[in-house]
Image (cartoon, rainbow, N blue to C red; front, side, top):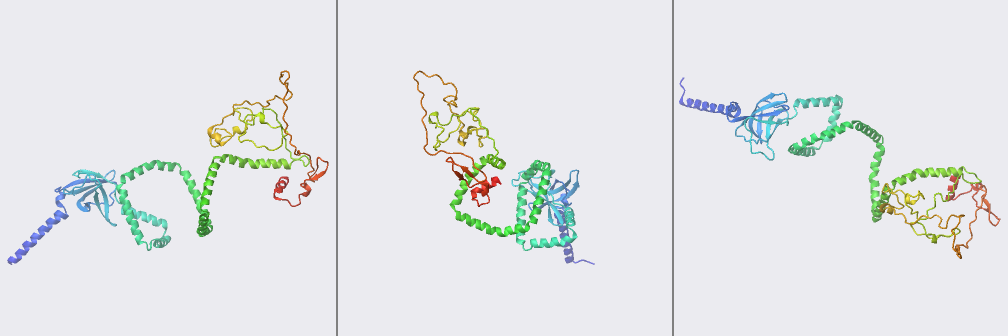
Length: 474
């Protein structure tokens, strides 16, 4: 059979097209020149795991294929992937390598990502890169998902699915924004990976501290469990509070609005009072502790006393032991006669002004402890700040000498000055005894009087201030 010229031309064209196709497939798809090292160079990437990377996977730079994975080998510290990269691809030497996945079922590839400040040097043959940016293998994810489903249980999976549907139904836009935000967050995290790594490394001492306080954390967790149990038991009350809370808040807001500036002034005054109470809190605590005991002792003394002679209390009188303090009070020229009983205005600040280490009036005002300045003692807060200054006068308890002692001899013709009298023409005070049962007593004129507070009148109606006597005597 003789072929015609037209058939021969067709065969020649088909042969040329086939040869061109085979060459194109061998060069651009099978990459036979790269297998022999023609027009390419080799780079090795060290990784902790393969992340699903396989031989002949693509290598990309800025989204463009620039090579293939020639082999993936196992080492003692992880795996090494040998890459064959086209010579025309200028990849910065400080680029980071990562294993990425095209789809959820695999098709991993190696991606080179240049930093914000790429270096002028590029990758060459024999370059080595280390990376731990590999995806979680699908087998690991499936194992974790299987363990999660086993924890949930077959009978609760439907409930979980129903609850998940209820939670995410109609939230497509929100989920889309959430995923976009997560992508931005991951991108920012990747850009600051060095700072994040340093933060993780520096978290070691903090975690060690938490480990040392594990017992306290467990106790706190147990207490928190008790609190949550109590909140669960008190759910109706809490619900009632939440329902009525807005109304109460509105009423409180209206109250504050009506009070206006007066509320601000009141809070300002309360601030001053609070600061004062904060300083004198120990004194207030001591008063609160001792007052009930003192009151109980007084009530006991009154109730246990004789109805004839009164409370069972003993008093002792000391005279000039130690000597009386006269420094810091009125001068002797202004002292009044003992018989004077009228009221007289006195200047402020009268107190014993002896040195603080003097043995006279040791418990006087000059030795009051300064709460605002621990370690200091002074009679007033002002002197606590400036310091106590004693008087320079000498303490003379009896300027005219002790009664009964010999007076110093006076020159002839000396007349002892008389003491001016402070006689008060108003009637004096008279003291006498009375019958506690009837409340009757005899006055200085010999007549019989009644106080109307005898025990025989206890069943009668009392006024509010008489309840104190009733409480003490009961």
